[in-house]
Image 1 (cartoon, rainbow, N blue to C red):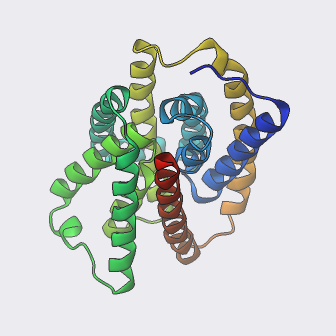
Image 2 (tube, rainbow, N blue to C red):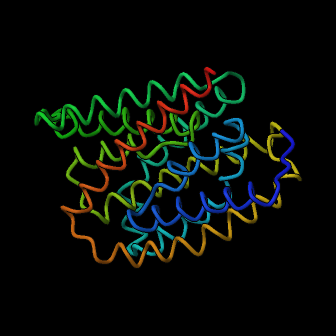
Length: 253
């Protein structure tokens, strides 16, 4: 898809990137989760994902480094990240060869079902009773959905909440999965010719806007306790589900 932006359109895209990166800095992840549905209001899904690939890789690296204890996090969450990478390869191949709007609706439904179960205090006990199986299921599902929609976080949030991870553990697990998933997705996009020279200008603007907003969000996150953090995660899940439903409805018109 050839990208041609006028000034007002360019400002909108940069504003979206700034907002998404600030959210990522505040909660520790979420840049592709927030930016992709917003970008997809103006571009096809493949272009929206392509524009976020390099900023997402850079943001994930900064977020992982910012949390510290990288070696310990890698040792603990490497199997989950590897499963997410495998799933992302599968999901990306599906995205490159089929329409994926229907998968956004499935994802939104899954999010809303989970939030409904949480409200009536029904837990997914299998996550703690069968941790290895849960890791495989959640890791692959997160990767496939990430490859298809660029939205991996909801599945990982559910996994982290049900596994009892604290804020730092949730951030490290999510960013490692994003990082591994984005690496394989970037390779597949390049091989299939989905990254074009006309993406350089908007892609650079997205990268610069995201960089500045990320550090602002990271300063805000220092003042959040775990209880507030979990409330923000659930609120963001609900907002994302609404965005996905709206985006699916728009795609039908």
